[in-house]
Length: 419
Image 1 (cartoon, helix red, strand yellow):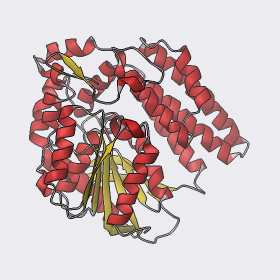
Image 2: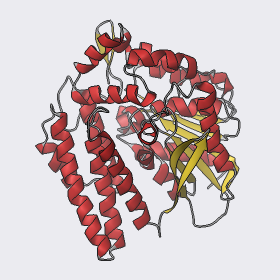
Image 3: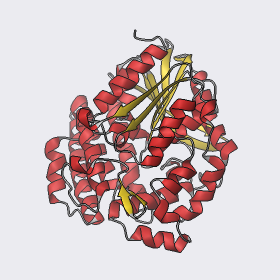
Image 4: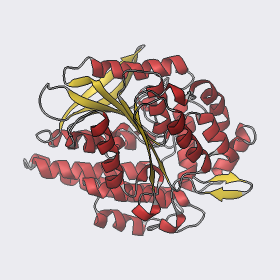
């Protein structure tokens, strides 16, 4: 989403000259999210033929068209997976279920929290991803787990580097403002197990999906102490496992997850390393000076009016952000961030890789740089995804292969692993 400063639009997530398919100059988000799914082709969660076939047919101005187009494709591929499973073709079934997940996930991008399909389509993504992992269980060792904190339960997926109890370095992935635990499979989870790391993919407070399981999991019920309590409970779960090397714990996150992972690392000295794209120390300042300033320039009704005037993807995304924190508007959410989502970068002591993209907005660039400069870490590095390398988008979604090479080479060296 673009930000506004002196009535000028500042790029926040991508270089407008790098659009691939959706060219509306007033709607940067749609092509960005489309290119996110293009990146999933590398993992088999989409195919070029299926993805572009649907994209050519949808009306880019219509959330309903996008939702129905990708949902239709998802149902078609899911049926193929079910048929393959009945016939005993486990690998083919798994591959189909993964693509069905990808298209249900694309469909979900168009669904507002007030829409009737909001929960059913989300749970379809969960179901298809579970069927994918179960069908591929001979090659992807995994467990479906649950972290509990004060009676609240948070679903997770523990991916094992190998089928043994040998302690392995382990990464906990924090979700961004739009991503779910399953999405982090493509943001480092699969790469982790391929490189000999365990991975915990999990939905925690301030993520999109915990409220789909329990509507009381909101920012109102998780002030800073309890937010950290839930984060620490997830780390406690890892430390207690025999197959986790407790001295080689890593925390990672992208976008809003970059804030969460940095916040977690600054408040828990059990982490040996942090990788954040991008690391942030003040979410309130991101809202005020970065991506959301137009939406806090009045009361809740004025904020909603502005949001409702946006293209459908930006509108749905911002409505979901408010909903997932338990508020009706960005204006009402802001005070909670001022109480809960700030940290001192000097409290970062573990090995630290600060990542940002060339196309990030000024506030994200400033905070990512300041986090790197002020961190107390003995080993730290700053890496910038650049246009000349095809890695200049937010979260480097246009070149995750390069990003993962930098990320895991840094981790291998910092943890003295795979070297």
